[in-house]
Image (cartoon, rainbow, N blue to C red):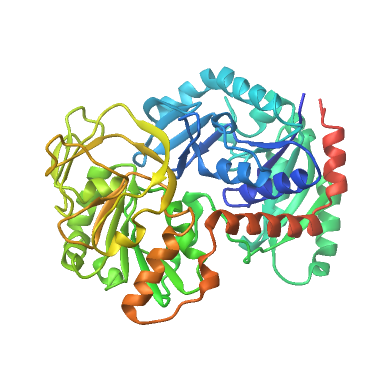
Length: 495
C-alpha cells in the first residue's frame, strides 16, 4: 500500500493546490513514485487524458510536478458549474449529467465506491499519494456525507496537514477555530499546521507560533513565504489573473464571459515578459488590443447572449479585419453563423452567431473528449505564421460544427479561417503550448507594430513550467520541515 498524506485548508485559496504540487516535486526528487489525488474538484478548467477522460487541471498540474502522466483517477469527481445552483457532474472522467446543488448533495454518498476505486488504482503505481482537500473541513453544515475533507481522510486513513493563509489576516483564528470545530477523532488526524503566504521577518511570528502550538496541541510544520515569483496554474474560481489590466508591448485581450472555461489556454503568453494578457468584460475595457481571444465557455449560448447585451459583440465585430481574433472551443462556436440546441443541452432553440466564421454548430448530448496532435493546416492571413507547425492539445466540447462553404460539411485541420484573413477558430485546447506557436504569433504581432521583443521570453511552455516546479520545490524544501513531514508519513496510521 502507498503511504498517504493529506493537505487541508482553513478556507478556499489557502494554497492547498500549490503545496500539493510542491510536495509532489520534492518527493519525486527524493526518488519516490508520487501521485496527487483530489476526490472532488469544482472547476471549469479541465483536461482530457490520454484515456479520453476528463479531469480538473489542478490535478494535471500536480501530476506534472510529480513527473507522471495525468490520470482521471487522480480526480474521480469533477463538478463544472453551469449556473449559480447547478453543475455538470463528471465521475471518473465521464459525464453523469447535470444536477442542482441539492440533488448532488443527496447523490454524492453513492460515489464513495468510485472514489475508493480511483484511490486504489493510484496505490498500484505510487509509493506516496499526496491528497488535496477542498474548501475547509470546518464547514459543519456539510459534515454529513463528506467525501472530500475529513470524510475522505477517514476513508483512506490519512494524516492531515492543515494550512492557513496569513496574507488574508487572522491566521491564528483560522487554524485554532478550525481545530475547535472538528470532532475529537477528526482533530486527531491533524498532524501538523502550516502557515502559508507570509511576508516579512518570520521571527516576528515566534511568540504567536508558540501560543498556537500550546492552544492547538499540534506542531507547526512550516511557515511558507508568499511566492509571488512562482507562476503556475491556480484554481479558476480564485485566480488573480482576471484583475490584471496593465498593457504590455504586446496587448492580448481575452473576453471574460460569466462562464469562462479553460482560460489556461493563455497562460503560455503570460510568461513572456513583453506580453500582457488582459481579461475584459466591457467594450470600454477591450479598447483596441493587438489580438483578441474568445475562450471556452461552459454555456456557450448564454455567454454569447451576454456579449450581445453588453456591447462586446459589436466591439469585437468592429475590430474584425483590423485586429486578429481567435476563438477556442465555445468561443469558436460563438464566432460561427449559428448555434442550435435541439436537445436543450443549454438554452434550447437556436441563436445567431457573430458571423465571423463560416461554420454552423449543433449542440449534442455526447461530449467529444480526445487528445489530438499533428501539424497545423495551411491558413491564410495573419495566422499563416502557424501553418505547418507541430501542435498538440485536447478537445472537450458538447457540439459539432460544420463548414458552410464545404461540399461535405467537413472541417479540415485544427484551425478554421474566416472570410476576413485575420480571424480563425479551433476546438483544440492547449494549441499554443507546444514549441513555436505562441512565439510565432507574438513575433508576428511585434513585426506588425515595428517593435522588438525579447527572444528569451519565447521559451517552450512545458520547459517553462518545469522551471516553476523546480523553484516551488526549492522554496518549500527550505521553509517546510520535511523531516517532520516524512516522519508523519512513516507513522501514517492514525486511528
